[in-house]
Length: 137
Image (cartoon, rainbow, N blue to C red; front, side, top):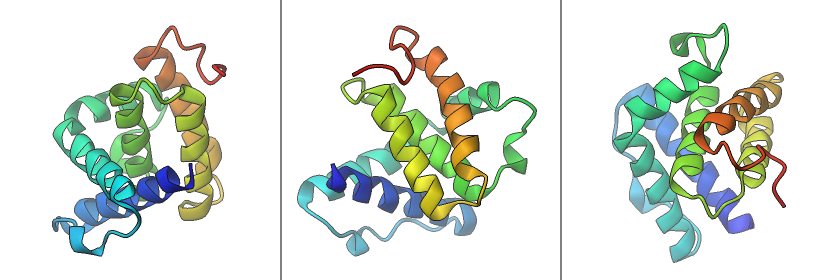
């Protein structure tokens, strides 16, 4: 699973770059296996293509928070995990949420992991209502 974590981290960095600078990702700088690079691209392009829907889902689950007030790292990590919940039903909800929490601990603020966990837990009940939200094994 380390490969997927690497892909998620690279995707977060690319989404952050897109959000902050508006520049295209430098796909030539991706590292890892072909599978890691393909998953990175899938995540980034999936968020880009579905951003409006993803942002609406996040806004509905981030109680008392408006998207412009969120840190760019937290918002892009939520976008990434939301796309994964939508597009990759074979990945358990618990895995997607736990990966997002770990990445939030690495790249976010002191409060990011708890915030990301809360939003994704609420969001998962909407996106995958039959999953048991984080309790599938």
